[in-house]
Image 1 (cartoon, one colour):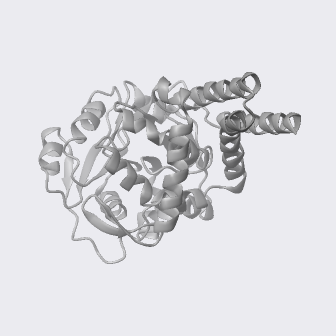
Image 2 (cartoon, rainbow, N blue to C red; image 1 turned 90 degrees about the vertical axis):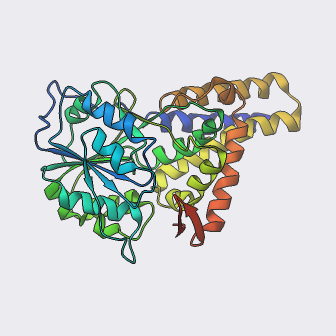
Length: 347
């Protein structure tokens, strides 16, 4: 029985490396495109605390965009004042219509106001690394480009997002979209129907993937270490739980079958090692297996974020958080959840 379990473990463990191989660095051209046709659109609701870092990172880039537009989505914290202080244009959209989400409405309004032929949509909690904008504009692609920000972890609770990030990245690289960053030509954006075509969805990136593909627009999704970074739910554990609950189960359900199988196989391996250790007491065999798993988790996690080494060593804790919150998100699907002061239906 035990040799068979060890063979199963090794097979499932290899699935993790197949998965990790997809977290590729982008191919960079020698010369970046000019920024004079580029409009950066930032949907923002109560983001006065995040905008300075993002806007400073844009102004410090060697390549300058044509314009930076902050779409103030009904903020009450001085978001618009912060945007103007850093030289960004402010878009004040009409009240949120029925059937729209706040972010899709803000992106739609920003796109209508933008004058550039290339559009970048980026979340307010992201920022460019030095030279990052030039690297983005140098990435070889023929259609829409999505960049997964590198997760800059600052507080211990943020480490709990580790397996959520891994699973979401697995569902988007290399032919999908993430919600934090999208670069697309205006004609491709309009051809796919823009954000209006996904106006009622929280996870608009998953829905837009299908819209672009149906319109014949190629997609490329790459990891953003050294290009783009962000912090995810820095406000505390409650913010993290609310953030992942609002649509995580629906996001996993939209993951391509092949990627989902790899994720399930790998996470099964990660649980199998400590479980067999507890059941058999074979510390030499299954203890080594646990160490091998921890090293693999550390390698994969450090390619996408600065997650803490201690938590990687005790990876079953964030993994069990992942399983528990996924189950809770699935149960909450279609029900009301609170996010950024609005009550919304979870995808």
